[in-house]
Image 1 (cartoon, each protein chain N blue to C red):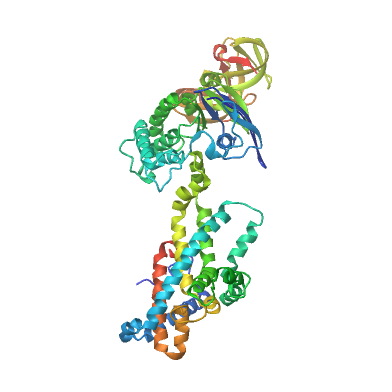
Image 2 (cartoon, rainbow over the protein chains, first blue to last red; image 1 turned 135 degrees about the vertical axis):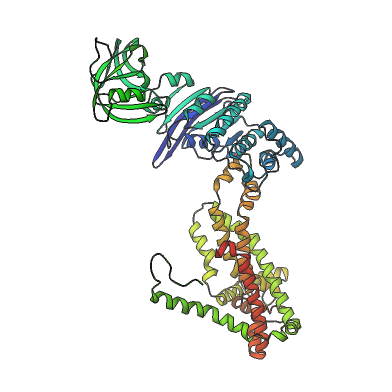
Length: 344
Length: 265
């Protein structure tokens, strides 16, 4: 099963235009900020949101004209939407019954699916009696039970607490690996996307801004949104060899030698701060201003602006020793070996 | 004992309190008067009288049948109004609510003009099938359904609009057709709304007077329902009228108790 879709949804205040392809067995994650159009894209694939233009081809057949119930899909909703009046087993059996299975056979298969997601013994429970993690797995079993060729998951882990999320994420990963069709996953959590997906499609304002394997996207972000997600400082610049000229008139040396427009990244931890100009003439050194200081895990994140907006991670001890305070002037330095450039 | 006041926003102004208490007394006193004047010792024997039993039986029977008619047509009508957008939707919704504000007597006249023996549809029903509706028990059911249906439609439509549409979407992604979605998801989800609407509809049908007497007449045992019997008894046997009234009051209170979760709290 392969997916080849061009989703165009035009609304008064919103415009989605997204080309999406996936090979058989591939798990694609749509990653993006709230309101970027991820869920709309998923709903368009399901036929729940009408396309203004474009197509949805599954194995080469356009299903655009098919209503939702005739598409070979399964969908896991953000808050699961388990039917509150049906038991867990009847929720899973619902789709099988709709596909023509008899009541007894549908129940047997549903029980089988529940045991596959590790929920034997919960068959008779109503959705209200299930924990968040259990409900998520019932929703997954319900979607998989109809043997879809396209599995759609809308923020499948967003409603779970941190501990459950860890457990359910690894289980979901196993189920997705076993699933033979195409899976499209919507998330705003980079970790979910990195762990679950074979390929990321980053969406901002209804457009794809970056695509690729998770590792590559994490290493080479191309928008501020992605850079923030993966925790990197990102700049556009113009490279001549190892030297990259950035917009505000600063030049930094990068590990790579390139020519032409480039992106330049370095992690916040690669930035060193000094009260006064350090001895010697290290490259990648500039004088700057501290705009904000905040806790960031066990480190302290120092935000620098003017001339270059930079996030720097330092230890609490360094903050005390250097007497770093907001609105004061410092010197910042980045090692060239941790500064990476790649073509824009 | 609690006293009035104690609200953190200050004393209750008497310009509001006095009319409010007057209104309350106006609503409660007549009912209290009814209970005080009820001939309790002879209640049992009076209820056992054939005329009373017939009227009560006929009322319960026709109101229940009218409610069933309203359910069968009203629930799909409510679904149409809540789930399908078509040109003229607002007009249709307005038309559905007309019987709600129309004087029931006018409804009875209108029914007579359409379904009467010489009416637009009634003439044809009479000649083709030999069916006459006016002044029959079926006529009572129709008159009651005409007046009570809007209560059911409005109540169910409200429940449908309040129901989370995404459950229906989830059902569609599982391969359910619209009919299956309605039967297996929508209907169970709005069942409480349908029950509430049905009770309201039944209570309205039970109390129907104007349309019934106009369209179905006042024949004891055939079309004389409780409200008609009360009105008639008031002139001949006031004690009987009181007894019948108390029975209707009891039924109303029971309905209210049945709906307390949805309408009162």
